[in-house]
Image (cartoon, rainbow over all chains, first blue to last red; front, side, top):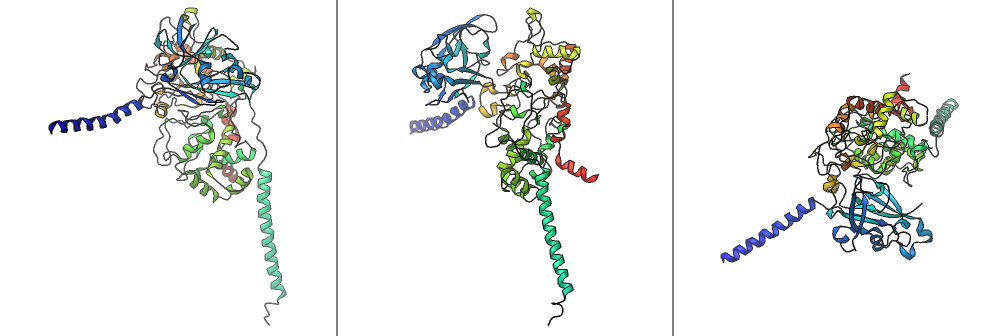
Length: 169
Length: 381
């Protein structure tokens, strides 16, 4: 009888504790990236989603003048999953589409789709989540675009929150 | 036989008073028609601005800017009856002479409770996409709803406002002129206010004049401009305050949102209140610096009374936290320094440049002034 009471108590406690735990998690939300616009399947990207892709590394200098190894996922691979017209479809009218990347601080940069497509260029543009084997610093991450070999770092946009595909008007 | 009935004199009198009434009605309706047709210009409103401002302007397709819309919007912007106690209008917290701020840290609404954030200056909103200190409204139309209905600001529902305005003789014909029929709705009220706000263009400060080679800055102003635009590089002997990182460009507005190190543990979480993201804690809109010398006190909570205090903050008192914007960390004019360390003269020079951003034409433009005040003034003379 006592044992049963104990089990009941534990069960009751665990029921009340679970919602408390999940509330605590909700308070510390994780950043995500919304992929939208001219896509056939809008996406919300999080850390688990990115793990599904092949990881690629890009080495480039940061503002400190030193080489850093960034790792993440080729942007066009993510966009293909959203149904963006890349690969054989990237011709004609589709060449007037661009990717608008937005950061949580409001900063925005754009890339023409052809800048992202392997059929047009070998230059890798990745969505990085790690630098030198560690997660990006809070002020840079959790996600940052890294453009291989681009001289200025201005399009290596930090704290990415949205990627939108649009036609030029 | 009733002698009165056939009294030709009396009949003539009746006829006369009938005619007079008829003429009066014709006169009143004609004059009101003329007032609308002649007194108020109609047609597309041409927004004039320098080419270096760029054309990334924000006008929703369902609210084109018209002269009559701007006229109505201006009337409504300064209309106290849009508030619950008929005491507060948009103009109560946005005074033209202060570049549409009110000189207070927080403002009192209809219930005498203070607002939670500082009243923002209004200038060049035509280029802004996100409004409020936390950027929560996506357009001027959406923005206007909040102060109109917030219980601590104007405190009146849009429906109540529409009803109240509908009973004031001047408004139904104006709404008809703007929207094609005299129906008054909350949606039409905010659209007209937004149209007026889009015309608040500030583009003739001494800085604008300098950019079009019409003003020669003083040596202090020039030095201040250089410090404003340069990032500090002590190893190369370049001194700077890097203000342009967030306030750059000819509009001195880039629509960015940052944690500028005011607090380690912010009392007001800013954008994080909306997103619950740790990186958004203490993050607020980076406001325009247009007319900045007129818009004290400064910051989202009006904590700094003067530009000297603002410069002291950025130079020496940035507070560390996990969400501090990274470009503010470790920027210094001294090798290995942890803060900007501007010299007193450099701060004064930057403030001299900031004073170049004051646009006298903007704060004195009669097209932006309270039209109700103008009519009552006119009546006096």
